[in-house]
Image 1 (cartoon, rainbow, N blue to C red):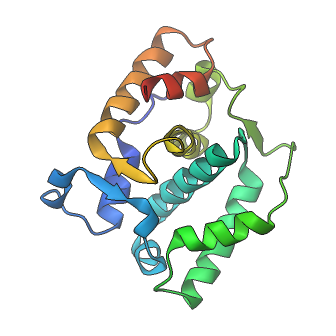
Image 2 (cartoon, rainbow, N blue to C red):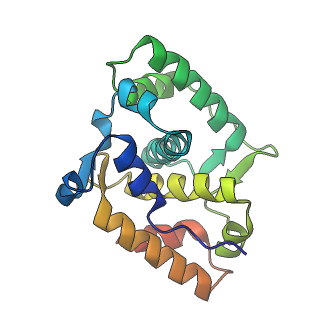
Length: 183
């Protein structure tokens, strides 16, 4: 059984966006300012976490709880192509434009309803899916917070709270557990 990773998302994003530990003292980064150049400079794991967080954030804003991994991977390929052609544009602008024209893809073998997955399902999933779902649900829970700001301390508390809650009760639903940790 794999444990939920502690602070993977903020550490990966802050390193990927070129923020050193000294600049992390600020402890907050407005993710809406991340440019395609920033995204292109990220390591593959940081790109995965960043894209998953952004996907969760936009889905949270729209009230959609379904994460389709097939669509997620296709969206990453689209984002990489768009960013190669528009390095100074913000990633947020790409996603906002794409979201306006998107049609929701429901169901299928690569689809996860974040509202229905239990902590046990989450902990028992493969490591790659676990990382994507973890970042996605963090973005989803952040959607009703102050813009698209990532706070390192809040993420550390969030990851620990979710890990502790899921270890205690594998039958509880993951998304309410994640949302509760953000209160």
